[in-house]
Length: 524
Image 1 (tube, rainbow, N blue to C red):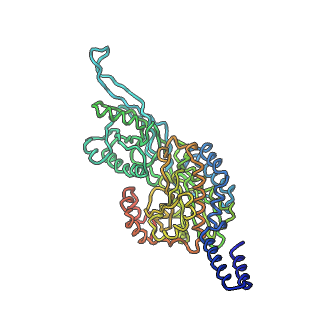
Image 2 (cartoon, helix red, strand yellow):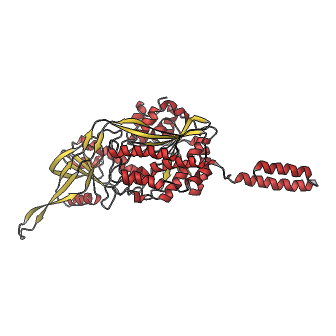
Image 3 (cartoon, one colour):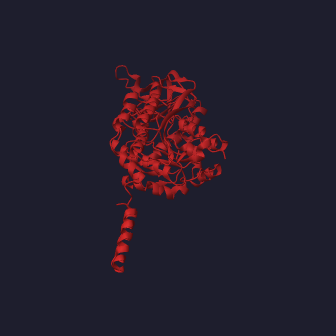
């Protein structure tokens, strides 16, 4: 019996009640009943409907198997990336999207690694009493991969290796003349999100000093143990970097460092035959569920489709590309019809500097006043703890209500920091409310960009919960009577940067100048 039927029954009883005492008793019983009813979320609440549907069986695992095991690592400009775009179109269509299309953009250069080779040779003394006494050369193979979007290096032999410590200005000053040498830079083992951002933050100043000192190449020690190699880029917008660079297995790097510390000389034979080409076309994949009442206003749920190719890009970020597809399926299957349009976007070129989301935000700038929120997942399958809202204190009260249904997954926190490093960033700089899933590290960091980032690392039980979270939050944003918050002006965005102490972060990643010059972010 629904509330209207109960109220009609109550009115009928009053008209036929034998005395006022009976009426009063029933009145308090009914008030208690209506209060309990109001405190209990109705079963037909759209968020609950979507969550229930999202947790049911779906093609999530088979979709990710196709993307990772069959297609593999997905670098823009490669055949694998083309196949991944086709996968996105087909998967969205099968999930029931109202429409699916792709939108192209340009990355300034193509890049792929050749067969990087590195050998280190040291010299040590053998006692003259032994046969063949004197100086002996001892070469050993160094496991290394090129840093992405770094230039090639023709084979060089017997190049001195210099231990640069952590690569600070003091370390460079102590090293003296580094011209024509290979610089070994120490790192810390990656354990936390702060460690990861520090790894990115420390690299550009090292490169600046290495270029200034005319070094031959830089060799960064891997931040993972057990010979795990991985791929990063220090380029910010798909440009070719200024200096050949490699990441060397941590164990090999530490061996070289110990040899140098004990007074041994160490030389490198190094070849980095990277293949570099001109501009390449890349594509974002966009699907929609059309809004029933406000179709011109829209929410974006997104994740990046591209990945590095040493592994198969399962945690970063194939699992979340599959999540976006499955969220669309869950919303359609639930029967919920969002008031606003929801756009489900698989961005390309994220690893080269957020290229796809930047292009989308720029190309759709004229309609961003109608954007009702951007939700992004990009941290593997570690448990979601909450969302970062891009410094927007004005959205907190409503956002708390929207994530209330997610308390069953322990999703409760809202952080008001301004994050960098994933596809919300350019929307945030355009003043659009953004929601980035904050997740526990789980097994993400050790496998980040690495040879070990493969399908078997994905926690599918947790990923299904993430599908439910993403779908429910997207529907919640789409169904609000008024948008959760306005699009901020240029001055309001900058004020938010200062209030959240984000200016130094932007400077560290070379983004502040772009903002000041108007190259990036909202113009007015």
